[in-house]
Length: 465
Image (cartoon, rainbow, N blue to C red; front, side, top):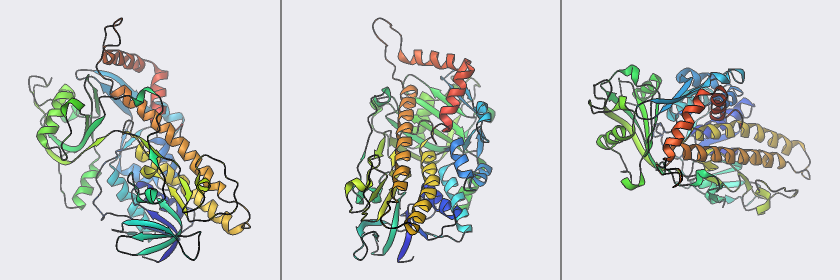
């Protein structure tokens, strides 16, 4: 690992890898990528790549390999436990994009594909390299010394924080990370305040009935979808051979159930499927319409989490410089810049609920556009007199990504509120449950083509790239 570089990318998840690939697309190679974990330690986590993200990846020639390994979902079926309420047909996107679908592909497979492409350029991701602190370089105030756990120091002009929700780069730069209370209904407590997701294998039942299933109930929201066979191939390459079809399941766990176990076991997950999943997945033959029980045979991976949102106060700053220099929104006309440049993308810059599968998508788009902004800033800094302020390029980038993040957070909060509607009476005047009204509205909306198109457009991200 070198002692210095122009750009240091901290984090080799999708956002960090795409930043590197975006720089390479623009012909820039003077960067270093580091990550705190060993290769292969990442799990499947995020699962969907939407149209806007695939289009962004296409601009840096990285979309085709990912599309080839994923499964194209052209409709999303949502129902209650016994029947379908609405099917969101994504074909309405045909006139807007060459990717009129949601691509189902686990995050670690996406990372593997991006990592292999980076290797093809001769780039190595340095692992495990855990950043512990940042400090201004003693000899040049416009550079940052990045200190690692083993004592190694890399000096960089630009430090990109792509190191996740617990970003060390963000914390060392002194950037706050809080929930932007939108004042919308999505800020209310829902049935999805805590969730569990898992990759599992089913046994029993008709595999043709076990497609993309999203189920709403008075107490929860449940999701089950098949993962592409390429995921089995990736697991086998890492020494975990699974011959059967793997499914991703996810469910909200009511707070009255208590805290979700740290490592949910088969019995715990089966209970969630039986309580909140569609009847066709029930392990009770008397409930399952096929009269054949479906059970969880194997757990590949499972985790728990709380749904919450947060956004970095600013996505661009200069380490140790005047606080105004890094303001995300405020105008800065200062021409005397001191301090190395810090930029945040992906989960280091914003997090939100998994509703709608927007998180990884927003981070990847951050990264694609950051590559372009960095090249413009590097060129402007070297070609223009020092009296000219080139930082407006990064301020504009940060402003735009901040706005997009706020839009996505508001969207996911509202979607979470809809899917996790609590089973309460609307009022004493209308003694009908809120979940019943929600189901009626969704059923009616699914019958209207313009509502179908609006839902597809909102999920695609094409209106907020």
